[in-house]
Length: 220
Image (cartoon, rainbow, N blue to C red; front, top):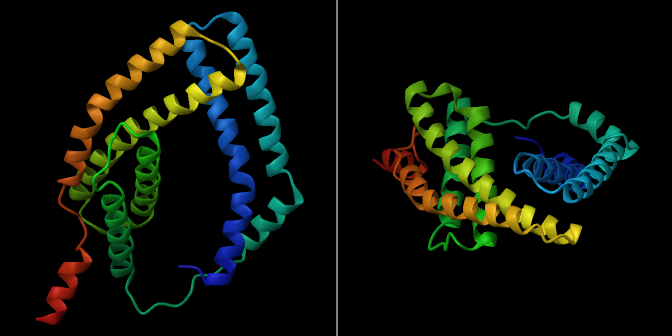
């Protein structure tokens, strides 16, 4: 919706901050998981130190002049002109995000963490698009679609947290054998749910009018 140049400036500013926020979030999730799993005191203490450091770096990023300038610029942005109605714009945007998610998952091996992550990113973008633009469509159909999408996101999010947790174990130079085994058990359980959840989402009829159907109608 935004003009190209201002949009690119805003994206650059966001990319300067989001990595630090992402690291802080990863340590938050990991430390909380260690607490709930009854991890050894020494391992938990190390994780809490890393979490505090990550939070400090995140606060520094959000308190920087570069970020303050980006916020001011973002508030001044105005959407470009369009001849499409809001509903037409919404249907086009949602359909585009939905199609990209389906394409990303085509022929996927769900055991491959990198492939799962790519699908997860597409689904997050689809979910945000729906959250902003789906309000003009039949509520019951929207709720069913979002319900399937959310269940899929929860599974993929849990698997991503496990992947990140395994990497953070390495950063702590800790074995954590029993806790790692719990992570592996949780991962196996989520993987068993993933393919059925994807099939349920993929088979859900769209609540918007797909672009192909709109083009066919216009041609006739």
